[in-house]
Length: 177
Image (cartoon, rainbow, N blue to C red; front, side, top):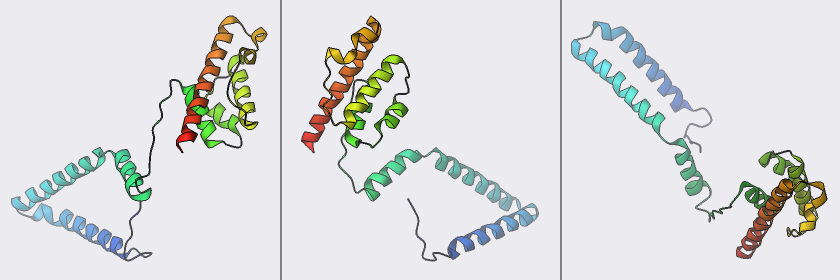
């Protein structure tokens, strides 16, 4: 979002406005105590109006305004599709599949900061398959059953299931493009 002034790059009109506001401030500061009751009431009411206007400006939803400007004026109303995923893990894997970054491990570690034995195994498997451009279909053998306890195996199988559902969503995404 930007404003363009005819006096660019000197911005003379902004300078003149600043000078006029300073003169107005000094005049009101010097003349109001000597003025009539009406003038003093007008001065106090102008302060009230200024306060109310500033309060209104600060209450505006700036994010909504910025979003409208971005989508309507900058991007020209692009086609936006919203995807819903059951878990954060599915969302992260889908994002990695769509973006195909050079170093998926950085994004994976940033978005899924868990650092347990199960999560490290899951992340290394995902990164390996993404870099090798393999499908994200997992068998029970991928869980390295001997290495983990029953609860850890269950968690790992759940994580692999999330990754597989994200991959299936990615396949649908590619088909719709």
